[in-house]
Length: 401
Image (tube, rainbow, N blue to C red):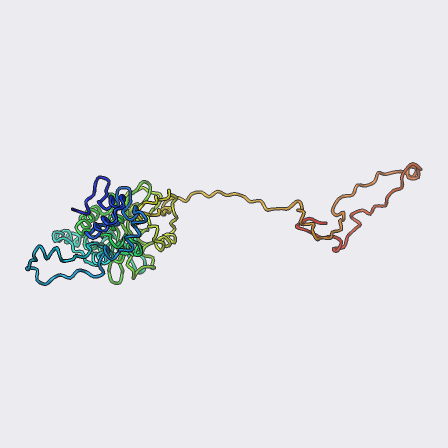
């Protein structure tokens, strides 16, 4: 039985064993090399669909099914064949693939096919590729055939670095390199990588996708690459990887800026640049924040979605796109025109009449002033003749008392 065989929904026998809560069947499949990280068409994995009791049992019995800590030793005498009864008695370890197998896959160097010698000779006759963007220490050019081996090594390193983010998760103990590559958009086989990138080299970034590489000006070594795709009114950054020794030197920003320039040269129309980052990859999110990216609002992922597929979309405006107009709202200064009750608490104020025009008494002749029916006049001091001392009133938030 092939434990990796999938049906029309993209599900392996492991999915059905998990849904039926068959713990022993799950462990048996894991010993045969089944994967907990494979995704179906709904981006679900056996680990994300595992019932609580099955997950606890797998955690307790991890030594039975997880990847062995050491690689199995190869016997020196390969010609000697064992009897059938000896093969049944011999106890075999688990065939699960985990972090050790992934590191071995990433460290294995990739070699260009032999039939590419003609293509390399043609590129040498064309001379050095055109520099799209550069700084004092690095330069960015289109990818060429002689750079694909180094780009392939960087892509493998990118997959291995992403896998380290899940080192404490259960599914990593039985997850193949093929499952990581499928979820992260990479290629497991070197032949698949070279076949795909050969078309990109031939088209020189004019059709569908483009790949740019960053070189160190001193050594000429490739220290980073970016793989961009043409989207609907946006430039999609598929892969962006910078060598660990050259991180923090602006190489990533230089690659994205060069990708925008090359996309415009190729006639692509886009208003924004977008990239998808794993939810658990906080360091990468912080780097894109510093580049001017912001999180794009999207519906929350389903609870059964695989952690390898949980990504956050980050978007920023393209450099050539006009900036959106800003709304200018005039804010009037606040002026308090009345007092609240707490303003009077504990405040002794003597009210005075100030800055108000006094009404002049009506003019009377001498006869009317001595008329017995006329009431006595109240002496009033005009405001312009009275100047109170500062101690006679207080000022509270612009209102005089």
